[in-house]
Image (cartoon, rainbow, N blue to C red):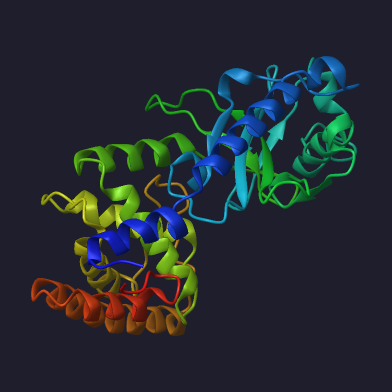
Length: 333
């Protein structure tokens, strides 16, 4: 309970939105322990492909520090050594053609050829994880692009994504190749997402990430079609990249600005900032319109809440914010 809007938001962010510090520390320790085990797979697991730890990378909202409670997944990309293999790009897939010297990769190809089967690569990680004694009782399976590992003692999954890295193109760029869910491969570059979030956040004195997190909470609870986490994050980062006025450390000041920007932009396509996927706004027109309507409604409430606070009526302001964020937002004391 709080007597001011500032303390209400501080309490809300600490106890409801942001990851619990103790749980986060435990997650980091378990992640590092798992990575140490994975780093030995090519020497401890029969016929396991040669690892390339130089390109290992943590990705997703947990790595970008935009994850909110409850911690549900930690994404890890684990590098493999291509050993002279090459790739070919098609309109709907990327094929990796395995070199004759990459004997353990050849065992994981599609039948009667040297085209690497991403499903078989993931399954190799699944079987390797099953052989870790501490994970005997874990739920380990292939899930589209990843080997997913779930222990009952954790609230989170580990999503382990095998990857390769391309050679530099004519522009000096390299890309990661990861499973596409259909047995082949696709491009990505999580380095760009992490760098973009970090740079934009720094340019606004470190106040953007908290704004992203609180809007992710809004997106999760409101009665409207859910915006994917990555899409919402991209939209908010687009706003702050284009905005020369510094973001406030008081997140309630930023919320109506973001809602207004969402209202103005959600009906249109949103381009992948990495320039790999094209439009990432997968919502239908009806879904986009419903999100726009909700953004408009909550924008009006947020403006009213801000005005009530400016007038010194903290109780009514807090109650108005509770209309937006629900019963988990602190009550007026």
